Image (cartoon, rainbow, N blue to C red; front, side, top):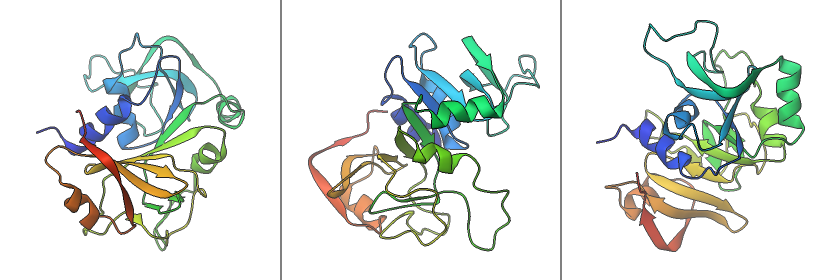
Length: 219
């Protein structure tokens, strides 16, 4: 059986189209590059200052210790890539040059509000670039496990931890489901292999609208 994080990344990779410029956040989003053909003309932006980011590198003989992504993982850079400072990196973000950002989350609620940077009482270095990313003129995909380690749903009626952005999420992909955020509410479009609609509903605090033609994720 495919690892659930890999499954999420593989399904998200299917959303992306040639010539799109995509930001990858930390965690599961970094795995998406693994499932993209380098010749597809889909280009990944890393917030820490480069473009055309390639897959994560684990072979010690192939690691470039000066080439890391926003998750501090060793990665590759594809032909045509470039390095730049933070001002340029956030100029790309704020200037409307990205088509998508793929981010992790602590919570997403019924209105598409996003909380992904702080649990009250926990030590954190700050909100990072997430607030800039979700405020821009781009679409937002959330890649996360459906429930927290204690079994609590991460898709909630109303976020109760500090927000990153308001009504900014377009798509949620979890280890259980593919959900689209619409003006009418959260629409369940697909279930993960081996997962029933009832299981998704039971694991989701927020109400779900059921697509009349719910499919199984093709992963």
